[in-house]
Amino acid sequence: MMRWWHVISIRCVLLGLASITNLRAQQPASTTTAADVQGSMLFASNCGSCHGSDGRGGEHGPDIATDSDVQRLADSDLIAIAKNGVAGTGMPAFGWLGQEKLTSIVQYLRTLQRGQIDIKLPGNPKSGEALFFGRARCSECHMVNGKGGFIGSDLSLYGAAESAGQIRSVVVDPEKNLPPQKKATTVVSHTGQKFTGMLKVDDNFSVSIQTMDGNFLFFQKSQLTHIDLGSYSLMPANYGATLNDEQINDLVSYLLHVGSENSKRSPTQSSKSDRDDE
Ligand code: HEC
Ligand code: HEC
Image 1 (tube, protein in one colour):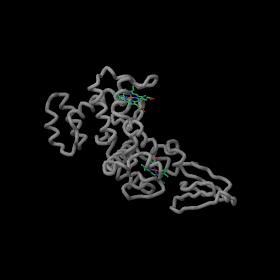
Image 2: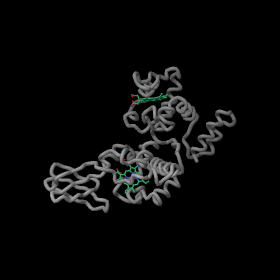
Image 3: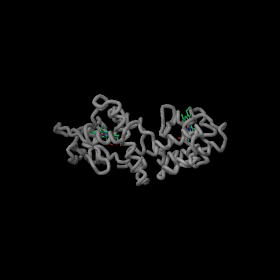
Image 4: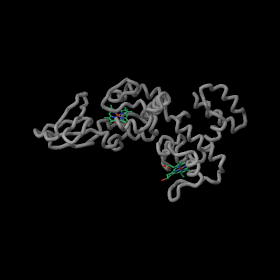
């Protein structure tokens, strides 16, 4: 809804049909100001083609919205990077825009970093939610907002730190796109028995895995002949075939939407590093 007004207000500015302030009166929940609108237009036309309209990265530029190293840079550093570019990389210099425009671009980038601007969703989050808990059976393994399974990670905040493209690539091809530590570990005992599950403990002497049925198995390393870390992904590999493009877009939209809602509620929990520590 807010996104819709946002788009309309940009159009009206372009056509000179209505003042921004009139439209703003009709969107009480929004914190958008005239400066944001200018910043968002400048960002879209100068930076979005490489960094994505949400700043979360694209084919030609990295994520500059949720990347914590970029978030930590001072405004003056961000302005300097935009002004001078990064020599020897694909990041051009935008000094010709002038200080004032660069400042409003960086201010807009800050709002993207805080997740305050509704991100553009590739599909319908409501249909995505229905798929997640229904036909696609994601909730058999993943929890969102307290509902669902446990063998996969809790995805309540996942979308807050990932781009649509990243989520899509995991859903369509988890085998290729999940890092080894998010894949199953297989252990083989001296008697030749094999056990597979998610690795929970791995220290000098012991290993513990959680199997698909939820049980924890503990092994002394001396009991095992083989430990295959990150052997294969437990996530179904065929979503690219069983779901069509629109359904995958809906699922991606659901995770982006729920992640952004949850991170607004508890901003301190949304950072990537917290999740990776689990
Ligand atoms: C033609 C593609 C392109 C455009 C357009 C572009 N960038 Fe970049 N940008 C890049 C690439 C590629 C990098 C990575 C540079 C590197 O490897 O260090 C980058 C890096 C950055 C970084 C530094 C990230 C870091 O890790 O330190 C910032 C900040 C940034 N861009 C902001 C902007 C802003 C603001 C704009 C618009 C005014 C913009 N970029 C336009 C391609 C682009
Ligand atoms: C049979 C269990 C299972 C099902 C069903 C399943 N997943 Fe997964 N998924 C996993 C496991 C296991 C992982 C890797 C461990 C983890 O989540 O960090 C994973 C990883 C992910 C990740 C990456 C999480 C991260 O932290 O990097 C995403 C996103 C994801 N799944 C989305 C989905 C979606 C969307 C569906 C439904 C279309 C789905 N999964 C269905 C088991 C499953």
